Length: 116
Image: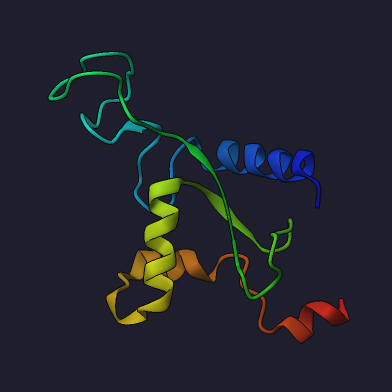
């Protein structure tokens, strides 16, 4: 898949999700002041806001290494994607909402995908 194709899938995912991250339930925000507005000297910190945007293409790694339309699960914040990676490795820490999210784009096996 090309970069352009993956960006199209990501943008469609953002629209489908209503601009909300399916992991944390927030749209774009500043990780320091948690405000949706951005700029300098936000509430509780100095300097520019550290923006978290829905710019990470999350996919099921059991399908393929780079991601495709079939295994795309959602558009996430980079921070949420890193945490999700940890939670995938530690299922006993997952809450039900995370378990449901991880089932999205989940092929039964790689062999199943190879046949289709």
